[in-house]
Structure formats: C-alpha cells, structure tokens
Length: 173
Ligand SMILES: Cc1cc2nc3c(=O)[nH]c(=O)nc-3n(C[C@H](O)[C@H](O)[C@H](O)COP(=O)(O)O)c2cc1C
Image (cartoon, rainbow, N blue to C red; front, side, top):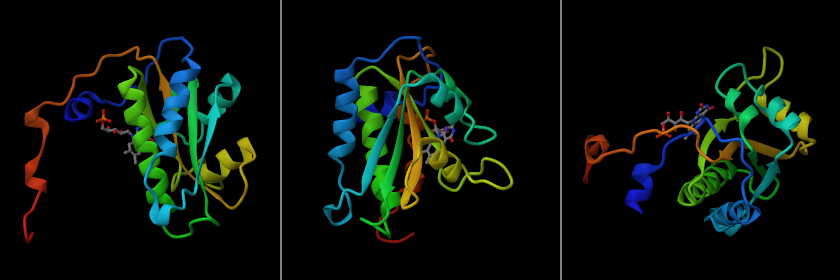
C-alpha cells in the first residue's frame, strides 16, 4: 500500500485511448465500497465519456480544470444531501480517494478537479454550472470531478524524504 501511495501522482495528460469497461467498473466498485457515516452511502457517481460534455466540464471554473477536455473519462462525484445532510463532503471525498487509488493501481492516471466552493464566474458557482450542464437534481451536492486516462506524462514518485513527520504529534501538540 505504501508503494502505491508513493507512486500516486496527479496526472493531467492522457493518451488518446479508451479505458476498458472492466477497469472503469473496478474503479466504481472501489468508490461504492468506501466507508460512510452511519453506512448511509449518500454518493452517486456520474460517468462522462462524451467529449462535448467533458469539454464543458473543463470550463467549470476559470482555471484548474482545463485538462478535463482531453480526458477519456470523467467521474462526477456527487451526494444526495437528503440521505446525509451533515457529512456528505467527507463521504464523497473518501469515495473519490478510493477510486483514485484503484485507478492508479490499474496503471491509470488521474486528477481531482474541485467543484464544491469554486466559481464558474461572478454570478454562478461551479456546482450550479455542473448541475445545470448534467441535469443533476438540486438536492445533490457536487464534490469534484475525477478525470481518468492512460498517463501521457511521467511524474516522480514520492520518496521517504518527502514524508513530513513534523506534522505528526503524540499526546499533545
Ligand atoms: C481536495 C482536492 C482538490 C483538488 N483540486 C484540484 C483542482 O481543482 N485542479 C487541479 O489541477 N488539481 C487539483 N487537485 C490536485 C492537487 O493539486 C494535487 O493533489 C497536489 O498538487 C499534489 O500533487 P500530487 O497529487 O501529485 O501528490 C486537488 C486535490 C485535492 C485533494
């Protein structure tokens, strides 16, 4: 597991190559197996392969999501806030993280694009933009979009020296 975590990097450039359905299914399984508060599993995952939609999703904020346009697959990670009102953010973030790790273990590259608390422009937030674009119900929160594809860039793995134990405290801070 530590080796998997050290080699996981955010990848924003992808080969122009489809991802096998079995691999996408395994990534979704990882999310669906996540722990959640009270076991309520409030998440919903919207898989997007349509180039036009991915292009529009890449514009969900002024910066920081451009690469989505060239990803073969994007997964919009959402939650039905009527199922879990208070901790849907934690629940979806954990599911998204597990999906990222499964994708990485399958040799795929990925990156998280933040949606919640980001703005499309002065009058529309990114969550509303994505909701309107994909007809997502009002009672759903949108956490992020994870882009997935075969990597077309190499990023160095983390090493032992990159692991910052000064952030760890015992008994008191
Ligand atoms: C909550 C969260 C939000 C992120 N949002 C974005 C984003 O909107 N755009 C982006 O390019 N990367 C985003 N990232 C990826 C981070 O920039 C990346 O994880 C960080 O630079 C460390 O690099 P690494 O993932 O290769 O270790 C996000 C990551 C997390 C965990």
